[in-house]
Length: 141
Image 1: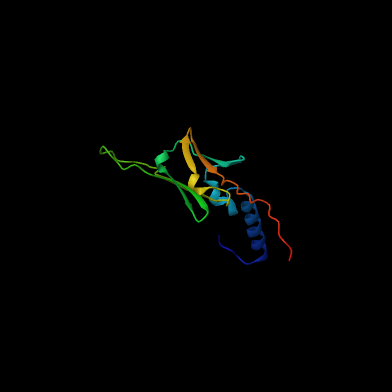
Image 2: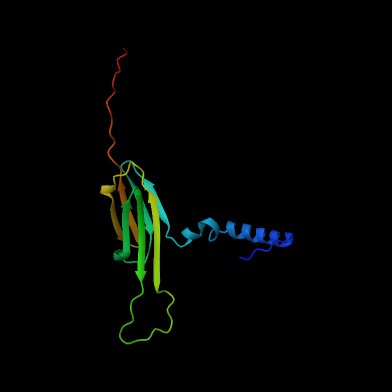
């Protein structure tokens, strides 16, 4: 956006900035606007994460855990032209997204499981077994 420095233009620029930053599709939330919705539920033994992604193939998902971050990404490239047909117009040639989550130290990263069914990518993030230390008496010297 071009910024002019006269007082009237500053007011107009400020008004537009406030308007667009208040909309959920602009400002700081714009990168999440095109990401699929996620539900996370905690149970006593695990976290259950569901990512809404209908119409996708499970082979196009990548799930990684690295340095305490869980990353779910999806990438689908356009099919190459075949059968000698000429594509006249292509509007949905490429699709991708990436969502990242910081894992709590309670999560057993080695035990994470994923399943894709009925348009939902479901992840089970099991909790580490709770280690309890027995009570210890300290002698005073």
